[in-house]
Length: 420
Image: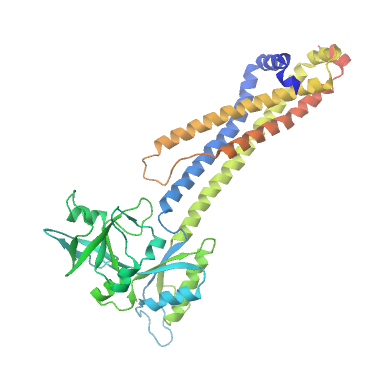
């Protein structure tokens, strides 16, 4: 390893490089471009990945919604167009029979999906808002951020059918002054008074509820609107690493059986599978990452091969010089080491410049995408990946450098001295 710290070795390397500066620069750019492409595309893919993670962080990514519609086919004595109604017992049956379901939250809503919003009054201020009847388990599927001092619905609220309510940010803004604390106050919803127990902050990204939504215990909603065991729709979250599309099919099949619907009737129950959307979205990001890896490695390999070709030409041009060195006592190992060192040095310089350039581009992208309304956040490449790419480049540079190095060693001194 002593040749690494030999001044003469480095003088010869820089002397060789400086003789053909243009050719050397073009070669470095070829390798630099490869790792730059890898860093830029991988970072861009990671930014997209981070953006989607941020968008979906407030909801269970394997979640879906299921609701009842009306039949489109006659079955078991029933005519076409029979309206269907989901029941609380359907929730328990799904939980018992489909083990892939982790959480299931029945909901009932007034003021959404075409129904009239609920007129709400506090003092001299009023407004019409969406009212939801919920169970505490709903927060397992869609996270609810409640401002300090407040809380969401709990099991005691359900058991005792308490007249408590959680209001949205816009409801607070429209019914209260800026300095008022809503928690503990009373508002009239329809003809019934409720005590405010919390203010729901609208989450950034995917949210199942708007800032005009209000939440009361499901059991309270049942009594207020005399809805019995009817539910509006189900929010369902499957376990991780299960086929959410198949889970959705299994749920619909079970519901058709429970409600005596033709198994082929695709319109009887509606659904929206957020898990399927998330899987497709993340698949796109993973595909972009893989593409960046393939393109980057291919470009790096092409650049490194270019370095090998340049060094082969250099060896050919320096045949007489190498012959003189051999005649003066230079060993084959010394000649080989010098050529390999030139290859590794050029590869390393190109790699470092490519990493710096790629990092600069990602920093610019990050600064331009901070405030855009698009799921894109913090485009970066993990340090181990960057180091791994650089190591691969150096290894490839070493291997490709052995070809011109062997060519240089094979030169016989007497033949080299005859070279003109």
